[in-house]
Length: 315
Image 1 (cartoon, rainbow, N blue to C red):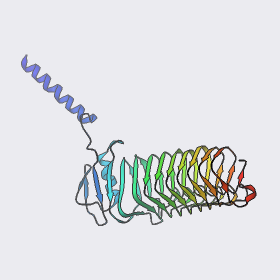
Image 2: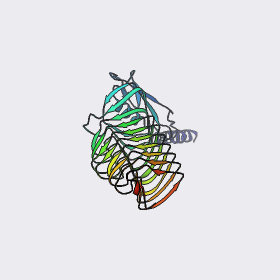
Image 3: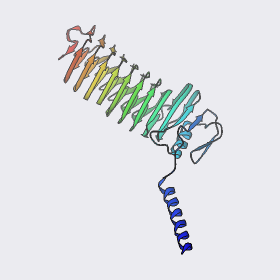
């Protein structure tokens, strides 16, 4: 009888151990796993562990982090040494990409630079440049993306979103979106049904073939302490708020140009502007702001736009 009980207990323990291995119960992920990347690196990956001093490509490190399978609340970190990495990145995991020195990811105008399917993902001290695609030349994100002290520069899209297109949550802090272009809409940033937060950042010198030279938003957008300058499009040279609610606070919208309407801003949804300046923009109609929706202006001069006779249309 005792032998049977001992066998039963042993079987129960073995069964629980098997279930734990199958379900992951009792397995704790090591928080803050860090991978390193440098040009010329030769490290390899084994079950999510880096073997060697540095990976030679960013994608190799991303693939190793994906194998590690970190939870969203405990992403792995990839540090990237200074240099230009000719890559087109695909990200399917929670990860922080951190540049050290002048770290550049260059698409060589042969494809999109970064595609994000899962996350969250953060990019710090990185430059994303010279991407080319039909849609989202620099970055295409379906998840949560945060850019800090980073730049998206000189990317292009034959259709829409030369710099970034986001279907999820996009946050930019102390970052710049410059010199990007799109054949149709959103030369710089396209917020497609998601949430955009732009803080202390610059959107400058972007161009769209139809709408939204700098920013195009079909969701919720907040622009704080940022500059949207010198962007161009036939309509909405600086900003096009097509749907949802956009809040602009402590910002400058300056020097943008539209061939038809909305030199600085074109609004067809809900727009709240406070403590901001909409100045020196140009368009035949609504040279500063063309409003076709709901607009609230507080302590925000719309002035020195060309022509002066129609600086704030339907305001």
